[in-house]
Amino acid sequence: MKTRTLGRTLTVSELALGCMTIGKSYSPEDRQNAITIIRTAYDLGINFFDTAELYAEGRNESLVGEALKPIRGHVKIATKCGVKFEAGHVSGRASGTMTMDSRPETIRSSLEGSLKRLGTDYVDLYYIHRVDPSRPIEEAAQTMKELQSEGKILHWGISEPSMQTLRNAHKVFPVTAIESEYNMMWREPETEIFPVLEELNIGLVPYRPLARGFLTDAQDAMFLHDAANTRFDGDNLKANMKLREYLYALAQAKNATPAQIALAWVMAQRQYIVPIPGTSNLLRMRENAGAANITFTAEELNTIREKLNAIPVHGERYDPDSDNGKSVRR
Image (tube, rainbow, N blue to C red; front, side):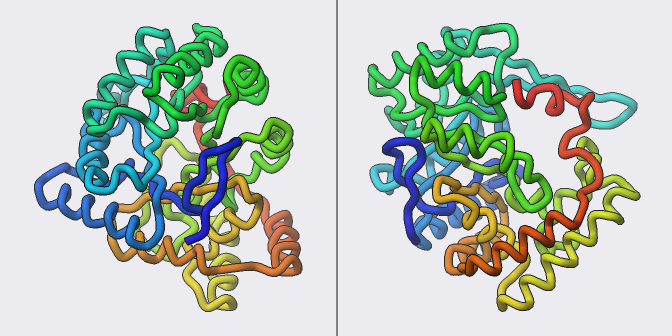
């Protein structure tokens, strides 16, 4: 698999593995399955793995650390801090509250916990998971700068920042990459984010590059259970099936799967983009890795762009009143 460079010097495989959904119940069987997926991904050329202290209250980091221990020197690990989730129930449904905390002492404490769980003495890429509106981003940037000088992190990034926040942070300590949703359904980064990343030489690590499974051939994908995403509500979902149908036609024409086309399309947009699709299914992971073998001509990309521009997407990626909706682009 080819490599790409995020920021100035972080070289990683052109496709990464998002580990959030790996492990599921963290039973012995699920744990072993997750380790098999991670190590098989490495065998296929993937050397960039993404997790966070938030995922399963740190258990995901422990699992990723266990899987990567034999090959730690050959891989890049990204993890995140700055978000706590307090679970609860509203009207009988699972709910919860997100709290952002990017105080210097919290960042340091979180990193120590992550290092212990990951079984490593440094993190390749350390993100602020969501911007804390109560603290200046310059303070977090300075803390990250200090952590790099101490050898505990090599690079840092921010997930879902506003472009002004990104500029303010970058002045204090150069940002290597940001995370943002980006896929055929959500193309806002093309106008809002790409110009700034190119100006500042910052990489983009898109999460949800498959739109929670909508841009695949899965019949029971996660998007069907995503209550916070209005793109998948009744009438919106029905209208958005036009995009899925077009993707299926593209896949058939390229002798590939819809997921492979969707991932290859994301990678084809810019050389500084490294998507992080996640799955708990070994066969799906192998399928996703196959996207690295798909190429588009300039004419094909222009045709796809024109077609996507002509297919309106109905609904929002986050309910504006949800915690996620309020936490992005700060």
